[in-house]
Image (cartoon, rainbow, N blue to C red; front, side, top):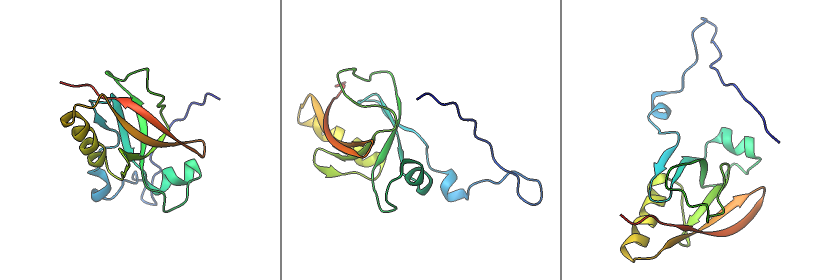
Length: 130
């Protein structure tokens, strides 16, 4: 199912656009992990509701497949990354750390547990070595 969505800020009572608190604005919504060719975002309460996930679900959402992404990896936008190399991840930095460990160990890929459509699966994602 293809769907087009337009997002905009709703005005508050004073007619001014509503903005997120400064703490939330500092987050990078789609931080890149170039060694994997992925853009990721931390799960927000709104994303959990959109995907029908429990409020306590942790992980990262794949927001985009970028340059350097290997078509050999079965990763899609909207997938939720739960763990990298058997370690739970909650931040983009957690994923970067797992990738760095794989590079240092000269492993060709990282093993991720992802959730897609309510199903969990393991996926080996090739790592681009510099």
